[in-house]
Image: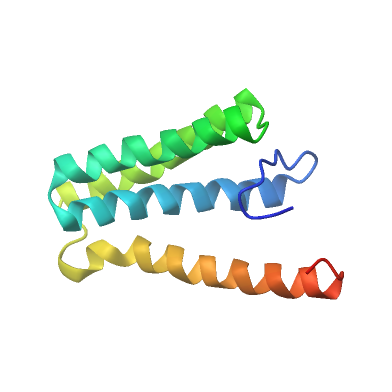
Length: 125
């Protein structure tokens, strides 16, 4: 499995939960990035469009299951909505608004390293 391969994680509830948590953090990161570039409207537009485009691509081009794409989309949007509310209510402000962006960068780096070493250990590179 590669990073952008569709996967339902059948019979792996823990991994599925981590995956959906990742979607939530990524959704928050996309909103935070858009918000920092503009305002609530830019953040909201990016948080709606980017995940939709990614899930549509996975469904139409990569053979993802429709129910899985819709569930993923729900978690993208929940993460973005939670971060929207955290900023709107003043719970998060200043540079802390970008926290989800850093989280995604850290998680992405860890995933890339594990993917590279796993592939090398199996002779897939």
